[in-house]
Image 1 (tube, rainbow, N blue to C red):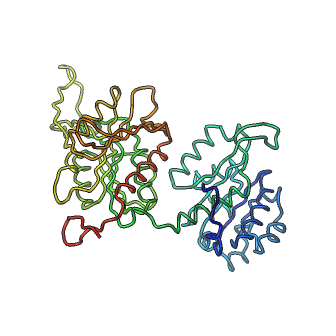
Image 2: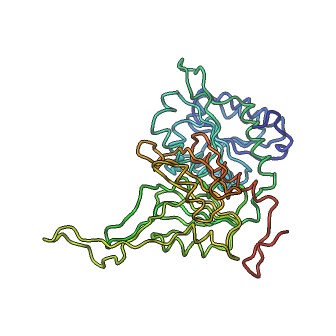
Length: 430
């Protein structure tokens, strides 16, 4: 966040403020006042619990707008339905965001006006959590927050400090002017030109499943979280992204075209079908081998012991996309998941595959990388000599933060933008 936010971007913006239950709800009166001072039109929805802490009358007096509380008010539904209410805003802010409303958002519930508006909105959503420290650190709350962030919900806070309940720790709602500054930063980012606008990107993610027979397959432990985060981060910077995903249980990133595949051969075909592109990020953990001849029926146990599986090498998607030629993306990025000698193996992979960058990480048992929410990576860029790459070591970050850093590095490298010719596959400078 900038030390001196540009509050001028707030003038004329429309904000839907959803106030949920919690003692921090009183801070929303100051938040509304500060937003109104800067030209923001604020409409508010109060949950039933919120009305135990602030009244609709006080919120209406400060916002100079009707306050909405009841999903089943026939007057409200004829004048301002919940869908219009949620979509006529430029941004939806949930402050305070209690543990209860975060859980209901994560579950996709729509059992009151607040959650129905949130489920019906097509606008960006910012949540500002506020709750007891034990409620915040509870695994259920943390899981709900991760789900919401994977869906593109933005979060501010919570802050640490003294709480109304007498305990100390993380869970305090951030102060009203911090929220105003974050909203200003959001709109400033929206109004700024997106550095990857006009670019095309293809991202691979997740594992591949290579069939042994109709019920068994060869696979790996990749969750797809990092690849999906990279696709979302590139899209956030304006890129037109095709995500080629192996079997995962993740929600599709917002604003991304998704092609679902099972095997390495299908992933290669889908990746090539997404060309031409400026950017290729091969984050998928592709199986190196497949069964040469998968059985048509389930392989049964027999008196001769376990069957012999003859393996064949799978196509090398990264090396194929990195091959020189008119369809080669301008920047090809691979991933190297290693369990030892991470930098040595990654440097060798960078030299062998012909790609431009390698993102290397340690996935050994105990690191928590496969299936986890954090990652600690090294970015290797091709140097003057293949055997001497330029190496950046990043601190341990969430996979969302790793993706954002990588996307920004890609944007910095590809600036100024180029346009793709519609008559052939050759990128042409503009």
